[in-house]
Length: 451
Image (cartoon, rainbow, N blue to C red):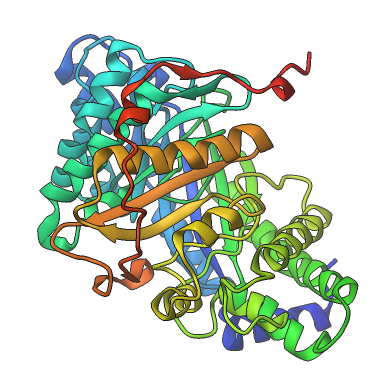
């Protein structure tokens, strides 16, 4: 039971500390939509999504009013489009149908324009990756992802090369909006099938017909708890404080997830208890790390502080819900976190330090703007580095890079809203062309042999 004290604490977390439900995401299977004719496939995808998600936004808004908890986004994730469109051979059919359905249902974004290519490319996988520039520049709400590596399969370097080329073309096609199309593409290693967060959400092959996944967020709540309960205290006290706070945050997510599930008549999937920041002051993961004693995020000690935070969040969350999943940890997107933005501007935070931080946190190199002159091979090599971290450490890692045309180190890109703004970060000037040109597959590590 939730007692009066917990209710009052939750009210304070919402009104003063920026606690919110970042997203309610409905996962929808599209396997029943498969058809070789483009018109039939389009209609089936559109009809399935609009029928199942007809009341998603309505229910989300009702829950906001009744419980007083902000629900920032209502979203949909669908089965990987490369699988659904293989029979017709044109992935763009799915992109157009998904976009139309998202607009009809009123959701913010729809994810699942996805290819899973960690061990090799089918012809339709290749077509989908090559279509990413068209799909993400011509649709409004479609988000895409490509899983290029896993601990069990290794790293598909051919797919990584294609992704690097696609990111460059997406940037060029959307250069009038500071390469905003690149914000809608995530390249993964060890992608999870129940992630509610965009741009990487898709309804995995191991999922059922439909489910409700909820992503919560509360960096401000954690920072305030450390200020009040752990100032100057040893790290075991810091960890315990974060655990207790994560427990409270997750309880809120569990409540909303179960209510949404009941009202929509859709099974409850998971609560993703990731600390997802925003550009608003008081809602920053970087500021949590600085509260632990760092002068600026990125200075020595940052990786250790982030490891403690990520671990404590997970430990606290799993005590509050038996259905924790998704990514669940601390996000470090540069453009979406005011503390990260300021650290990158000042030079305290660089690309190499961010890569080190991704060894111990959720996701990876996220929402990072780089010079528009950065080559496709360099982008691919950055993806390969991050994929290697995920593969060897048996964790999810990802890359969401934005090579901004016409911009260089010292400039900024502005996206607005939750996407925020990002200083252009320096990239090594040395070439990776010959490395990426080799192609093939980097074999899975020895720790993949667990059977």
